[in-house]
Every structure is written in C-alpha cells, then in structure tokens.
Length: 262
Image: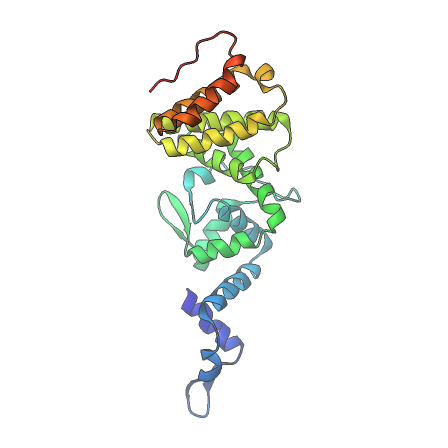
C-alpha cells in the first residue's frame, strides 16, 4: 500500500513519468533520494484520508479511537454514534469501504487498520481538544451494552478512562463511570488479571472521589471500590498502599466489617 501510494505521489509531482520518446519510464533519481520515505508515507496517508468522502472519514476517525483493531461485536453496538455536530456516523459502513480501498483488513471477528500509521493518521485528524470528547461519546454509547458482553464492558471502560476526569464533569456520569470501572475491575479479578483490575479501580476511584459526599450518596459503590482497591493492592504485595486505603475508608463503614480477602 505504501509503495503504491508513494509511486502515485511521484507521478503527480512529475518525478516519475513515462517518456514517449524513449518508450520507457523515467524518474528524477536525485530529487527522489531527497525525500524522506517515512515522513512522506505519513503525509500521503493523511492526504489519502482527507480525499475520502466526509462520512467515511468520520467513521474511520471514530474507529481509530479504539486503536489498530476493533472487534465486530463492538461495532454492532455502535449504531447510535454521533459526530461533534450531531450527525450520524456509520462506523461499520466506513470500515467496509475502507476494506475496498485497502486501508482496512477484515477477518471474521474484527476489522484492522492495514498499518499502524494509517490508524495514527486517522486519529491525528481529530483535533487534540476534541479527542477526549470522541472517547467519552464512544464510551457512553457502549455503556448501555456493557451488561451483554464482557468484551464490550472493558472497551467501554477503556474509552471512558481515555476521555479523562476533566472531560466528565457531571456527577451522575461520574457515578455511572465509577460503577463501570468497578464492574471491569471485578471481571478482571475473576480472570486473575490483577494489573488490569488495579488500573480500573484507580480510574473508578478518580471518578468517585470527585463527587462531593460520595459516601453519603453512593455508599455501596464507595465501599466496594475502596474494598477491592485494598484487596488488589495487597495481592500485588503493596501492603503499605493497601493499609493507606483501609484507614482512610474505615470511619465511613457504618460499623460493618471490612476485610481483605486473598
């Protein structure tokens, strides 16, 4: 793909051309040698993406928020995706056209960008200030589906966490996303993925502790997040960190027993 696009650019810039006189292809070797292939590839890909129909480009930009690949099961949940100006986005349709253009590869279970540079180019077409909005929007669309499939649960939590606490200022959403991270952490613990569990718990606590009087408003959620955080820290061997969680939480426990189960 890169070689083809590079050759196309050389033809457009008249550095590679077919000579009717000599009846063969000719090129400006010295000029071509000065071109940096890697930088040109990035520019070529960006140019190619910008030449796509706007609806397709918007779909590829959304897909790029998930990384280099996206599972079909995730795509099936993205039927209510909107752009920042409230226009509907057909992510699946964009990827299917991308397959025809050579930008995307498809297998039974997933779609994948043909190269990481293509995914990177698509993602970088989203203005930096808008990237958190995209992650929040995609995460929000998936949250309603997270009960159906563990994979969707993790993807939704990852998108929300990439949006960041600064983007999510509504208390109800913070409570919702703190609970989402708790569910993702619990599933990770069931699978003995304690590194992932700790990441989700830390994110959940960030959302939770930004809510005024979260112990009074969301007692069970607060209890479970602090409890599991102490438990996973203990499993990691972070005894000091585990103990830091316990004392800061214990006064709020309404005389219930707080124990770290290993």
